[in-house]
Image (tube, rainbow, N blue to C red; front, top):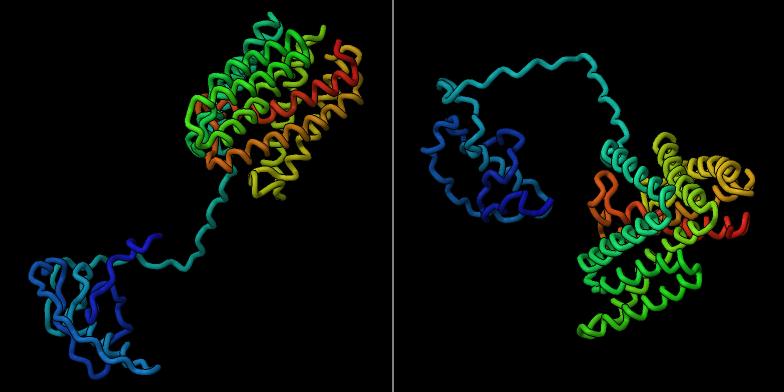
Length: 383
């Protein structure tokens, strides 16, 4: 609360409405003046200025004098005073207060836990996105590569916009968007070599593009640009590389299922049983119980996916895969929370109702993509 909410300070020697009422009449003080109601406020004369009384060392005479001054006349215009003996009260009669009941009052109802978002909108948007992704994944692989590229470009736009708004970091979006889309296509067409080559060329394009502007802030701008190129399009390229295998659509589906189930298990268990904070300085909503739920759900789902979806996979490999996904998804979520806390924002965007922006949905997926790609290559080959 700011100081202005307490009102202006009283003038010297004037004990006006800013002073609290005294405890009662003081012996030897002048008798109280006639009381009046709110209707006599227009006829009230200003209170004469009373000189300040000299200070006394450690005594209470000042308080007594102030009490006497306060009681010498009506001060609070909107507060009716009791009538003097033999006088009729002015203004409307006070209403009778309701009698106090000695019966115990009911305890307030406990507040229900809230998810903090519009769950209806979040579920609807999630189901719609899932349907589009699955349809593109199993109909034509090239269409799904296009979906990845579009998500990358939108994510880069959200990230660079927030950096400019909150930190005044001018990351060049054009070379990032073009290089990011090219990175995804190169990873799908040429594998890891194509992805690394496109990453290097994108970083170089960022350095050159930024030279067209004044040199102030050049280092922080290009550093943020190289970080954005690695964080969004390069990590997303591993999803495109999963798709190149013979069972590529099922590998990508396994990756998506494990990440979503890990997040869902963490939310469900943490919301119901969470009491021990996991990283309160980064994300106060995450709990250790939620992490246990993420690990359990992801390991169970991983065992089923490796046994029934991946060619040559076994259930115990799925347990390891689920454990790795729960760890990487949690770290990815914490990493994005760290970025948003540094920027002082809650969401990266508002494109998806109930979810935030595209980057708010990619936070767990991006760091999980290289983990799943690597483990699948180790377990069953690049196929």
